[in-house]
Structure formats: C-alpha cells, structure tokens
Length: 295
Image (cartoon, rainbow, N blue to C red):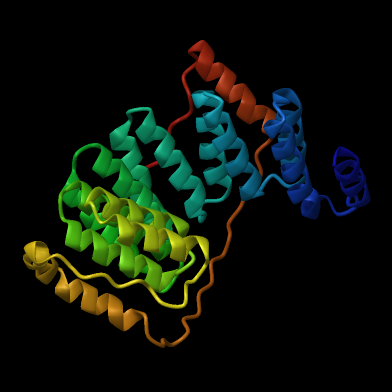
C-alpha cells in the first residue's frame, strides 16, 4: 500500500491541490498502524499541498483528539474552521472537543455558530442534542433532535437523529414513543443498522424476545423492503398521542417532494502547518493564545 501511495503522490505532484486526498489516506493508514510521527508528517505534507483542504484539517484534528492531544486537536480544528468558515463539520468537531473538555459555554456557542453556517447539517443538531442529554437537559435535547429532523427530513442523516432520539425516549421510559421514532428512522433509511439494533434491544428489554429476534433477522438478512410494525403498548398511548402531530408531519415528508437546489460556497484562506503546531506548543508552554474566533 505504501508503494502505491508513494507512486500516486509522485504522479500527482504537478497538480498539488488535487493530491491532498492521497496524502490524507496515506496518513490515516499510518495512524492506524501506530506510526504516529509518520502520520503527522503526511498530514502536514497534504496541507502544504492544499492549505484549504477541510478533510485533512478535520481528520488530523479528530485523530489528535483520539490520541489525547487536546491542545493540538483544538488548534487544528479551530484553524481548519478559520480557513473554511463555511464548513459545519469542522465547527461541529471543535464544539464536541470543547464539550468533552468541560467547556460547555464555548461548546454551545460553537454549535450555534455551526447552525448559522448550515442549519441543514443534521450531525450538528444530533451532536448538540447528545451533549445536552449527557448534561441532563432532556427537554433541550428533545428540542434539538426535533430541529435536526426537521432540518432535512428526507436525508439519511435524519435516521441517525431519529435513532438517538428514540434511545433517549426509551431511557425516559417512553417505550411507545421510542418505537415510533425507531420506525421513523427506518422509513428514512431502512439500511440503518443502529436503528434496527436499538429497536431490537428495546424489545428484548421489554421481554419480547421473539419480536427482538425478528428485528435482528430483518437487519441481518437485509430484508429492508418494509419496516416491521409492531403493536404499540396501550399504556403509553397518551405519550404517543402527544406527539401525533409531529409524526404526521414526518409522514408527509416521506412522500414525494420537490427538489431543492442547494449551493454552498467554500471560503478559504491559507495557514502554514508549522504555525499551527507552533501555536499548540506555545499553548502547552503557557504562552497566551490568540483571541478565539468563536462569537
């Protein structure tokens, strides 16, 4: 694999900007093999070829976070967002980092900024909802999951939001509502394995082992032509009725729709890789960082 990566990057040396994906893939391979120094070198080369490449900023930053290098990850993600101010994925990753570091005020500010950048980016809504859920703000989490679904209800990412919302409702004891949300997830994307699995686990925990086995069979056999529709518990009928209007709105979205034209113009600027890493090192030594770009 290294030989082919080497040949590929050499062959594309004359079009440096388009070779960045190769450098990123090579870096990720080395990272997976535990060759951290080589991975960083390859990420840096990729950014040298194209300083605006949002995928490398994101992949490198997330990887550094996974390695426990919080400061370096913060600088990579924040600088990546600085040179790609219209990219919601970068600000989402930065916000999640801050939330995990306990900087909830900054994290919420970044989530809001990401929504302003692209309110249809459903992973942002889901990530923010998960943060609020973890903090015990269940109503706020519900609101964010609902906004995430409404942002783009026919996109497959909506299935992930439905699934997370369903798990929340199960945790709150709203079993019937959770079932309906899992069904909604599978109507959006019937190949969504986490939704099938979460629904099966719910039924298993309710003692409905046969139903759980049926759901797992449907998932494993990829029999996704129609969603398995079980009987809703009468004991939670009131809870479902309270959300009936919401589900009716969902149902309307699952039908034919007019195509919507969307365009997102990427704004970019260049930043030297060396300055980013130097800034992270300065932060580690206690040198005051530049003012945050979050507002």
